[in-house]
Image (cartoon, rainbow, N blue to C red):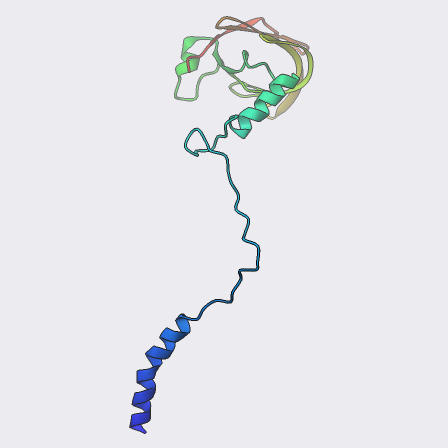
Amino acid sequence: MAMRVALFLAALPLGLALAGCQQSPDRSDEAPAAVETLPAEPDGGIGTTPTGTAAQTATEAEEASGTTIPTAIQGRWGMVPADCTSTRGDAKGLLTITGNTLKFYESVGTLGTIKSRAENSLRADFAFSGEGMTWSRDVELSVAGDTLTRTERGGDEPGGPFTYTKCAA
């Protein structure tokens, strides 16, 4: 009996080795798996395509359709130089403009109906919210060089004109 156990144990590694060497079934008649070929990326593959990022493409499409705030108006604007450089969050005169929002110190205005639009100007209705309140204003924005002028119509508060200077990048 000891001899049988010894022969079994000796044959065991050989059996395992042979089991690992089994050939897989011949699949030469099956179509090869599809291989997706991606276009070369000029930036080394960090997320852009030859035509730019998806976000840039969407912004360009919105800009071309005239449904956003013009690019010349977008950016960071300060009423005084310190509004552009404060790191303490106390830049009360800072106005940040994106494709569809005006962001002030304690309120945000969302672009609504556009009344007029040109490369360097916009007049539109904005829906504002801030400090637990909501309101609407007719806002006119125009840029000349590094100066932005904002004028508001409607509402009880003074409507400007307010003058801002473009913040350095």
